[in-house]
Image (tube, rainbow, N blue to C red; front, side):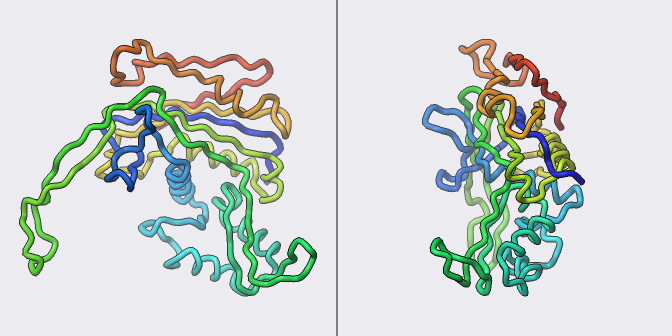
Length: 289
């Protein structure tokens, strides 16, 4: 497996229909929006879904969801100690972590080792230092192409959790969702950092497949099957390590404009999606799931 040789940029267009793409815990778990009404999905949310897909595809993952735990470890600390607990050299620990876990060599991770050895800025030997791994794959916060309409639905709890609580069987609750939104997910993979973590071309192909199938096995009451879809994935592989163009310019080359700015978008067909030509750099355009 060869280490990545060429810089990669990507853009995924994601549609959200009658679903909560990413709830805000500080706002009653209502879909995230900015002050101008544009929908948002955090980079943490997107990375969580990519990690889940990595795991679905059979890759060892360090940051696992509790309900997806496949190694019996109850915490990240336990998982790190199980593999790295007897290691005292922090650089060797970082290499071992990158070799073992795909998400670590993709996104990076911070490990704290009580007995690890290192040196401070003056060259003095230290113990108990943290080991930071910078990953080559970076993900932006996703933003909708136009302001979204957030709807609220009042729901009832029809059963009691515990007879001893003597709770009413008709307690009220709220459910929040986006009627429709088209979000732009942007990201890049840096070659210099890939060389440090051992991120390979095969790993890049895995990330591409994870993005294409981002919402497979992700259904929930907030995101029913079919409500979240990767409409299209644009994948640029440059011909050099530093890239022929800046990531910002590459990401801007995908333009999404509303056909009728006065109407409320209800589907992808309500947008005009165009791709600016960048001489010498053609993307692979992939239909998502």
